[in-house]
Amino acid sequence: MLDIYLPMAQMSIDLSILLGIGLITGILSGIYGIGGGTISVPLTIFAGIPVDTAVSTSLLQIIGTSSANVFRNILSKNIKYSIGLKIALFTSVGSVIGTLLFNLLKDSGAFFSVIYSLYIILLGGVSFFMLWDIILSAILGTVKKRRTKNMNNHFDIERIEDRKWENVVYKFENFIVSKGIDIEYAEEIKKRSIKKRKMNMWIKCGTIGIFIGLLSGLMGIGGGFILFPAILYIFKESVSVSSMTSSFITLLTTIPACIMQMLSNNLIDPFLAIICATSSAFGVRIGNDLAKIINQNRLKLFFVSFLLFICIRFWIRLFGSFDFMYVVTPV
Amino acid sequence: MVRLILCMSLLLFRVKIFLLIVFFSSTSYASDCSKNDIHLSKSHIHIGDFFSGKTIDLYGIICTGKDYTVITYLPNERFMVKKKYKNRLGMVVSSSEKTEIESFGYYAREGKRLPKDFRVYDTDFGYAMQKYLAENGIGYIKDELKLNISRSGIIGHKVHFPKSEKFGTYINEFFVFDQDRTLISVHINPILIHSNGIGGTIRDLFFKNRSLYAFICISVVILLSCIVVFLMDLINLVLKGK
Image (cartoon, rainbow over all chains, first blue to last red; front, side, top):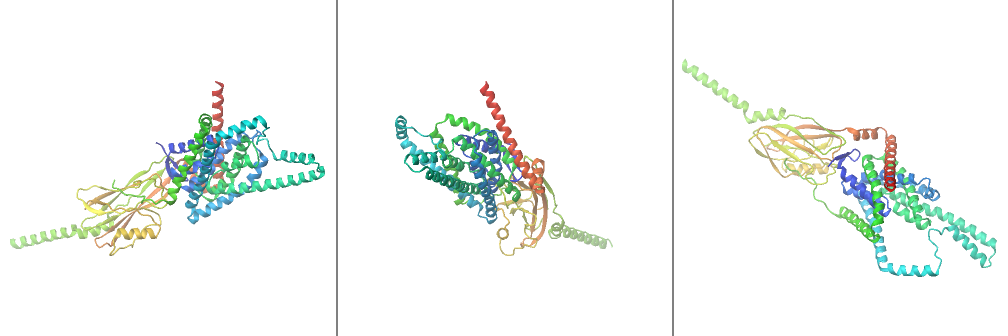
């Protein structure tokens, strides 16, 4: 088909391959809600694009996909700016450090080994936990349904999305008063616990932020697959809020990393990023519709097998040996 | 008198023949040939927005009488090659007589190539060249094929530049050795690879003004993604409306 020349990657590639990569990334993002970087970087590497170009250009691609998401929901209440800005402050710092590490590794010659190893660990870990979850739900799934049915009949279930830490503190205060403890003492305890929780909040934001920023700068991923469960379980927000807030944080993380990459290297290819980002935008819609149709366990199994396939290919690239690439034949 | 004239003319004729033989003999013809008779061709390759590789022809003349080894070079450093057989070197023979020669292939960027006084005395040239190139970080192509060329006449040489090609100046060199493995002459064909089209403009912009390049890239990606998402929302609304 049409061979498009990537000016910064300095190579030609079939346009259909790029469109396919973007579409697959978008579909998987739409189904599983994970970021595009985790999927698009391995796929672009397997398509023949140099590893450093693939990692750097994915940052620009993630800017495109996450910005569209954020601008659609900017006026809605789905983005928690208080959490988002706090985490984004640390992720920006982390992404700058990650980019510096990227440049150091590139000059040292250990770049490919480190990137391949990180992807194997990351994707291998995610697929292991998902596989564990699939096995557990397959074994215990029927038991859980019976228990929730009983509980619904006899107890008031508090949904995890409604349980915010302020409510927990107020309930604690009421509990203290009900036990006859002095209200002033209860107020004192409440203030200390609020202060401790605010400090804890900054520590949580800092830890998550620096970790995700480092991964973002080094591996070219947005960190959405860590941010989303972190906001959901640690900060106790709802699914839609977690999803939009993680997009917001991803956008603020990848912009400084991308700018640093552009100023220090000539690796970010705009053609590659634009083609993949626009085709993944189409893919996300298809993925959203597919997620409603296909059975959840089958989706999980497919995703786990896809991740394991990428892990194995990276493993082969890291530890395998290659034939001499060039062969000369008479014309 | 007649006999004298006849003898003189015969003598002159023999001298003439002798001179002709001397003039056109392989020894003298080879020495003139080795100095001047390999044509230098300059080639340009333009890489635009759509590029599927290009094969160019380079020509030279090889001389008769001795065992010449013609060395040509093919690409190497930082080359993205997806499969084997991507880079191809070939010899096109335009004359009828054929002689077997060995051919080694690589080409290198300006500044990185075999030195002109590279000589091999006892060891095999191919192995020595590979060793030298490997030690100096220049890649090489291993080619053990024996190709046929004519003893005299034009040799055409095709070099295929694959899709993964970088900009800059490349050098294709003909090294002519005699049968004692002494390097007689080196002939250089420069091959210039240019970029044009939108890709070329983007590269130029990057090297001239990186901040502007960063601003334009990020803005364009954000704008295009938002436009695509907006269009998809519109299509969704229209479909739901129906």
